[in-house]
Length: 513
Image 1 (cartoon, one colour):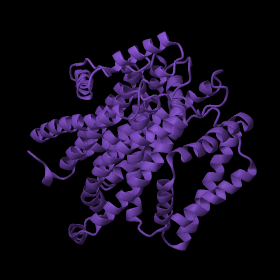
Image 2: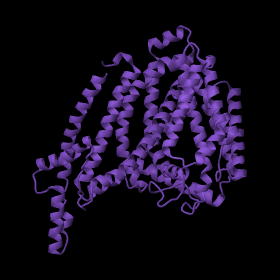
Image 3: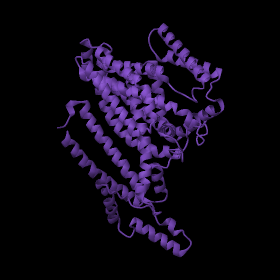
């Protein structure tokens, strides 16, 4: 496998160089970089501006020499000395790229992870519930989101989820009207009744319970103004963590596996017991790396608990404990983020309008780790949802089709005829094989997200990779455009390499030694 990876890396290296040559040729002949300088009225200033641009872009050399001069600077990245050249304004492209890349990667990573997790989950569920109400509804919205232009959907989100929600918090103080509570409760009840299958009385009970729960939740939010000062609290943390722990156990081992179930519940109990001490730790100069350290410790604790309980399959219990530790940690982290919400909303620079419509961060915002992280999330929300929903449609449809194809295979029928439980058939036999085609889809979609991010960043006014690329094209500035291309090419190549590695991890039959 290592030899295979090395060969793919070498091949990808030369493919990237070849593609860079084609892109450089197209960019170099896309327009005249001296056009704006030629429009300067004063002869001396005009000649000086031309000379500056000629020197910066090596326009006094032929095309081949210019490409290799550019390539020499880019290949310096292999030894930590990147040089993407200068723009026609004289600014270093390295500086502009460093500032833009982190912002764009934040957006692309958030959208990719959310789209993969949610899209594949929805696709698998709809495959298992083929031709149900849920399947039809998801199919309708999948095609709807897939058909919507990215820029149009971003504008709609800015108005519907951004401006209107901010007005709701600022003017209504997060309080729903009685009419809204009743209508939403009834609507959720009807949706639950329509989506879930089974006998009529079970569907009526499901719809009724959903309507009552929705009514109670919205009434509680209104009475307590929960949206202005939200929190979960230790009781709700325990309930949600235990429910997620049960879900993890069902998916990984099944509730009949008592060792795995005890591992999951013990991990939840440890997380709940540490909730109070963690509150003190959260306030003591908390940073991102401390957060990662806590997550790593939580995973280790879950693994240790799984091995201590033992059982016939210690590895299975350890995996269950590790995943439960991650979900419990996420709930505790979410609770702490909620507790910072009130301080963030009442900050003078936020002015009671937390959902941000433009820019990747609030300029000159002061606050601790939690305030800054909340600010990042509020700025990421709308662009991430915009990119995620388009990709989510693709992932959910491919996941559904792949799962249905696998479920119709002979070995699945054989597994069922042997008396295996449906959970075992789906999770241990079907799910893993259904993921193989999705590895290819995801790798191609990541490259598509980079292109979609250009439009999304423009709609939301982000000065990131999209802005760098757009300004380079408008100003006929080749170096920023080539910097964008190189980054996009490297990300696409890495995504395809990871897809190849995923093939071997998912199916031992195609592993390369």
